[in-house]
Structure formats: C-alpha cells, structure tokens
Length: 86
Figure 1 (tube, rainbow, N blue to C red):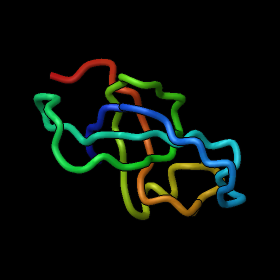
Figure 2 (figure 1 turned 135 degrees about the vertical axis):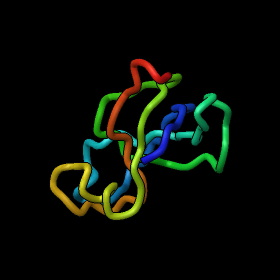
Figure 3 (figure 1 turned 90 degrees about the vertical axis):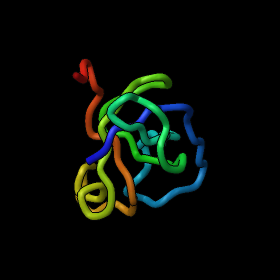
Figure 4 (figure 1 turned 120 degrees about the horizontal axis):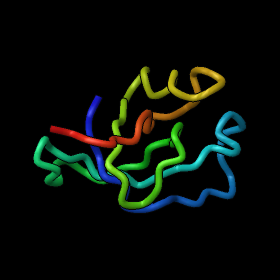
C-alpha cells in the first residue's frame, strides 16, 4: 500500500467489460512528507476520490481484488481517501 495524490482523471471510451463504470484517476505517489516520489500512473478508483485528494493505493494482485467483481484487469487501485496522516 502507498500514498498518492490524485492529479487528474483519465477518459477511456473503450475499456475492458469489467471496468465499465469504473473511474480512472491519474495518481502521483507521495512519501510521508507528501512529496512526489515515483512516476505518475493510472489507478482504478474504488472510493469516489477527486483531484487533489490524498489517497491510499494498492498495486498488483491486491489492485485486481479491490474492485467488484474481483480480478479486474488493473495494476493499481485507489482504496481509501486519507483524512489525516501524522
């Protein structure tokens, strides 16, 4: 699991059947000080996050399990909106 900042959205008119209705977000991984680290990438949204939100994300198999139905074809998913991080 990692922190990221939502910096945009992705519009895809054609996508896998299991991803219809799933919002795709551009996220930028952050360190504990909320400074950008790593590369911007697309994450499927399981939370209704918006641009500017600090979110928690998962990758790999966990990302594929985060959406319903399970095992959708994604490499990253937003699983929580962070309210506070100390």
